[in-house]
Image (cartoon, rainbow, N blue to C red; front, side):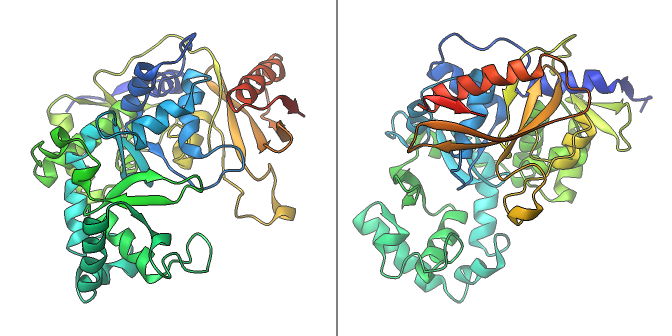
Length: 387
């Protein structure tokens, strides 16, 4: 193997931004095609329950496309079977994924059904408690779509993670791919049903690849979404095990799909996808969700942008530095600030609770942030921005 191609840090940033759908102009009006192409580019939107601003899975499309009708995403994720283009499953974390990734994750579903992966507290349903799981599955099969709250003592009393036995059973069935999300209630509670009643038949009929082939395909999707990345970055995107990811990376290098590179300032070897764009500039601005794939891997964010980012939701209020729900602010090819936001829906206000600028933020950063905040407020149906 020859000397890896040298890549400057500035070029690496532009490659990563282009791969993630940043750097170009936003469409004047967003349609379903724009949204589908954006989701295909990223391969997933992470789901999170926090709704202080807007639920996290809506934000990546806004960051890249600007104001769009959130009903487009709702329809793609939880709409009629014939119109659906996404499904829910565990990928990076709980995620919305394009339907063509379903065959590539069946190995994970099968491993969960065997009790080999998934939360340890749920693995008993693959063995000693399988009869309980089958009883819940039989009820869904007979009655149709059901949520945990439709079962007696379904959700438990301890908040989001205070699961009752039925909720735990449902989560194991979901991990195992024996049920999937039919839709979500207004409270965002997941409603489950059998895959054959939710996922289009053409997708379920696709052949199931060998697990090694599926993992290699997932690493390749990860590489496309990253543009340029270390092996750890590539593994993390779909939370693959290190050994499988190493094998997949080596095979993709041998196939010339991944090009070994040395990025300025990076200690680890890196890889560029052979189809990655290498733009000379990157323009635009965006507010990024804490769970946006551009920044969710915090070490990568620091390597690419020199931006140390930690979410402070779980930090006591008096110990927070930047705020509760802080969105990094992307300006051209830099992360230049942090913005703590809250949607005051009752009073129709977008509350800007704190803005923290990075050293050397450009003179027009505040003006461009103001424009982005006004765009976000309009997208969320809020009348004013209160700073």
